[in-house]
Each structure stands twice: as structure tokens, then as C-alpha cells.
Length: 509
Image (tube, rainbow, N blue to C red):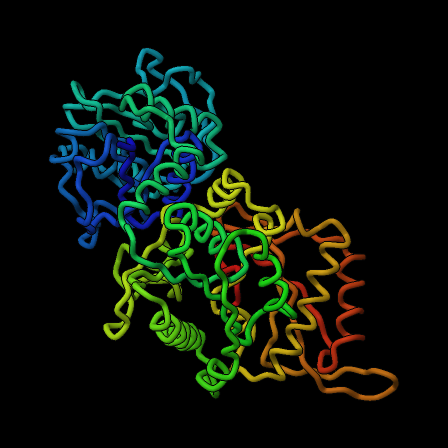
């Protein structure tokens, strides 16, 4: 049985980074909101409590009884998690005299404590809190300090329960990964054996047992996620997998034909379906981004429902859902705080009598690529930039029509082609063009124009949870701008998006 770690999320912006660092140690982990009880504590070998924007002192603080966890699992509380442990056990948490944010240096480390094995005084850590643990519970002992934070780390006497007021998960904490390894491997006794190879073997085994002799219909997109999901399913159930690639009219230029050709020789049973008219009709006069996503999701479901009825013994709908989709579609404080809905996350309508199978739903994007390499999938697929499920619909701000789609397809094709020809494509995690719902005055051939403005967007990222804009060469941007304006009728202005995630999202809608 796979040994794994439970991470309880209290709304920290860094929670996904905790998971990333744990996975980098070849240890599997899962994130649940603190107020979600859809897990079995006996399935885990350690618990990590995340940070939070809330204060344990406030009336609306995020509360949870940790006694049941502490009695059976090693526990590491990070920032808010540490303050919650201290507060619940009789410690005193007060507002900091000055906001403790940024780099700090550890001192007075208890080098005999296993949590700090191999970590020396002067090790840099990252602080991010407005409260501080002024007084530890009587049942605790201090194991590290900083200049401004006396109780930077502590342990409950006689327990493998620890609290730290800094963030080991961020890169600014120079020995953060080592501390997490100490807690998970040396204290929690977890075997770090979760690899791409072990994931493939276990997933294929599980898929065989879950699906049996039943059939699966899966929607291919040409991207990394759905392709890896398809190959995994194909290895598990062979001819009982039926792949459907739908042309929703919102793909990149010539993508429908090129993707179908891409799958030739992969041993997959793929059927291409032209459903452009259905999507265009359903999206007519809809400009709200969330409504667009829901409409597109509904039409996808309708098309799959029609196709599934043509397949003998089909019981399952396969999807390439990955972990960031899941994380962004749940919220610690409830649905109202959700960033955006994802078309491939959640249940199916009652009329569609299919169960959902999502073999990648616990993986981050780079992990999906590692699994793809293990499966010997072509780099042409694995290195393909992520592309949103709703396609160009969320890159066209405002309502959708064929004319707008064609303009955006042509502009996007130039941008992506130039990235490839200038050896910038593989250095960019995701790139695309956004069509704005505004027009501006321009001059072309001594004539006044009043045409569309597009935005170039290119980011670097690991898993899509955070992202930085790519500092593309000015000469490159100038050349791309000229080519788009000169070759795409309807565009007279090109701008470049230099916002990062957060606060912006990668896509504009």
C-alpha cells in the first residue's frame, strides 16, 4: 500500500507548494480543506497543517480538533498550523509588534532534534505572519529561534508533533526541503518510493480492477493530460477504450486535423467529430466567462452522451483532470470563493449514465509529463503547451462568433509558430493570444483603421498554480507584432501581458 501524507489546507497561498515539495521527495500526498472529512486518517502516515490568512485569535478563525490526529500521526504545523497547535494547548498567540514577513535567519537550533538534522544556525527561512507565538504551552519545548521570533520552532514533549512559524515549502527557505525530509522520512518513517514508474504500475493495476470488462469513452484534446490518460487506460483495458476528439470550433488553427494525425500509430482507437455548429449555437450572445465554461461543458457532455450510446457496454467517461484543476475547483471557505470552475471537474448530469474515471487527478503537470516519459509518449505531445479545455472561448473576451475565432486563430498561429522558430517555445510553459472586446484607431497605408486589439501572453510555471511572465526579447515581440498586424485582417494593435499569477490568472477568463 502506498504510504502517503495528509495536508490540511487552511487557505494558505502556499498550500500547493507544500504538496510540490513533498512530491519532490518521492512521497505521495493529498490536500484536503481543513473542514472536509472525506478522508480516512488511517490511510496516512503523517499530517501537515498549512498556513492561513486568518488569525487563531479572531472569532472567525478556522478551527479543528487536532487531538485525534496527534494521538496516531506525526504532525507538522506550518505558520497558522503552528499557532493553532500552540493556541489549542494553552499557549499564547499575540499580534506581532512588527509584521514578520520575508527572509529571516535561524539561530539557537536544537541540533539534537531530528527535525533539524543537518541544518545549521544561520540557515535562511521565509516568514509570513502578522501573529506570533508569544508563549509556548507548558507541554512544549523550543527547538529554534530567529532574531525577531523567539518561538520559531517547537516540539510537544513526548510527541512527534512539531510547529514552525516559517515556511519550509518556499524556495527562500534554504533548508526547507531538508526539514520536510527530516519530518517525513526520519520522524514519520515514510519510505520515499513514489515515482513515475510506481505510479504507472499501480494505476494500470487499479484501472484493470475498477473497470474490469466494461468500456470507457474518453475525450482527447491533443494535449499532455488527455493523451497520458488515454495511454494509461489503453494499457489497462486495451480495445475497451474508445477515444473521441471533438472539434468544438474553438481549437487552434488546423488543430483538428493535426491532432488526429498525431495519434496515428499510438494504438489508440480515435474518432474525430465535427461539432462546431453545436458549440457556436450554444455560445451565441454569451459573454460571461463562467457561463461560457458551463455552456461548453454541457455541450461536451451532450456530445459524449450521444457517442457513448453508440458504444457497446460503455460504463465510464475518462477524463484528463489533473490536481491543479481539482485544487482550484474546491475552496476552504466554500463554493463562493472558488477561482473558476473547470469543465472536467465534478459529476455528470443524471441523464448521462456514465461513471467518471480520472487516472491523473492527483498529479501536477510536471508529474504528468514524467509519467508520459515513462510510457514512452512522444515529446511532441509531452512538450505541448497546456491549452484550456474551453479552448479559445476563454481567450475571446465577450461573445463568441466564427469571425472572432478565425481572427484569434490566425494571430495565435503566428505567435506560436514564431516561438517555435526562435527556439523559445520549450522555454515557455504556456503561451497564447487573447482577443479583447475593444477596438482602437490605427493608420495603415495612410488610411484610418478602427480594428481589434490582441494581447500576447507567455508564462513560465511548474504546475500552473503560480506563474511568471516570460521576458521575451523586444526584437521578437516587435517582429511578432508586425507579422500579426500585417497578416491578420481585423487587428491593428498588439500588446504584451506582463502580469504574474497571482494576482492575475494565466488565462484572462
